[in-house]
Image (cartoon, rainbow, N blue to C red; front, side, top):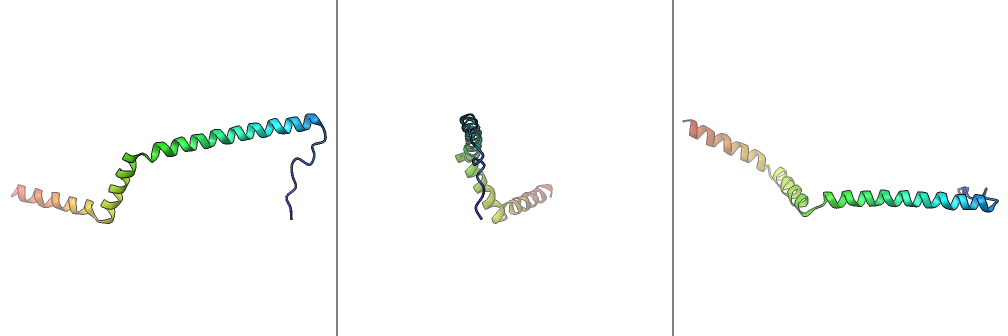
Length: 81
């Protein structure tokens, strides 16, 4: 089944003009939304953030945090003796 177009009811030039202005406003609003999203993506995916997230993922995948904590505990025990 085909979707009924919302523009089938346009009969006069005034209705057509109103529909055109409405579409322009929708396009402008969507353009601003896309621009805002693009700015947020550019702010998030900086080289610094990408490197930091890569190091965090590597550290979690290879249990480096656990190894570091265990090393600090062992060093602390040696220093307390």
